[in-house]
Amino acid sequence: MVKLRVKVGGSYTDLAIANCNDELHPIEFDAPEFKGRAVVRIKDFVGVTNDGSEPIHNGDYFKGRNRRFSFQVEGRFKREWNGQQIYFGTDFDRPVELPDGFELMLKVCRYIDPVVRASLTKEEKPWVLSPLVSSINTMSAWRPEDVVKLPSPPLTPRASMDLTRSASMAENVSGAVSSAWGFLGKFKRGNRQSVVTSSPDNSGHNSRSGSTEHLDKIQPAHSSLAPSEPQNIATPAPSEPASLASSATSTEWDAATKKKEEEAAAAIVEEGEMPLGQWRQHLDEDTTFFTGKPSMNTAQRRKHFQSEQHRKDFVFNKDLVYGFEFFSPHMDFNTFDIRLGLSMNVRKYLNNQPVRYTCRTLEGNTVFWAVEFELIE
Image (tube, rainbow, N blue to C red):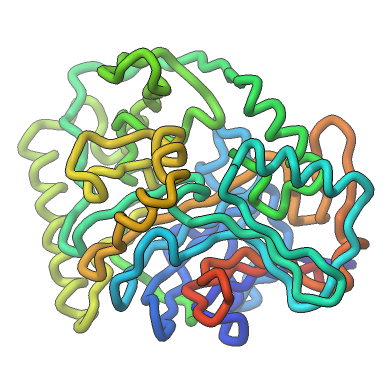
């Protein structure tokens, strides 16, 4: 019986097996140009763990989300790079077989993401890449010493929400392409370490404008943008932690927040040079540190960085921690089936290779991080 094995690391040759859905123990790695850590989430995971333990089949992350996998990377670049130099996508070490109609799919892909680039000749190592700043699903940044604050204690329990999904024509086109070859990632618009983290419900989720939750579910939100700009879409606030229910006093709430700050400060001291600070269990889109202006949402950020000049003007600051998340509702890595109505298995096209997502320079001389999915006997 084949099982899924997922590896994460700072290079293609130094990868550690990830315990999928273990959000409290990200894989930590230290590459020549990037120090980071990562968590991989797989819906209905039944694969390999790095210590032989029982796999964590699911997590709260998937509740209310139309996603089959996600990976989240947080870390710091060791020197300055601009947005035109760093790419994200999929690459392979050997040629792959392209399904019928792939060229048409690539044309549609380039219509959706005009800055995507590809090299798919049979004589080369194929790749499909796009600038990281204009392609990744969620992007955020913060200072290592920053702590995710607990929300103010609620006066009354929050009512449950009925959320419906909304899809634009462009998203429908993107979804159709993803269903055929979506694992490539461009067709959608170390060791196991314990880190200082909040409880699952204290993950810092909020209603900040620009959240990527609109890719799964939608609710009305106000926006101060001009009518021609995409509308901000807010996410529902998280439920309260059991230990800090709606009846909690302000004193209890402040004490919990202070404890988190003290734990994060202690972690920074312990980390030494180039600390990463508090692990953020979940990410929200936040470009405040990028622009010095109110945060853009995902669609606005992607549109903004489609401009080559904007990418060149943007610089990754080595003093900030950057968070990135990529996810998809179509690819089931437990079986390598792409599911959207009908199902198609892509394993036969891969020439016995894993699917590898990578953050690298365009020419491939520098790799910042990689996530590898492979079915093994």
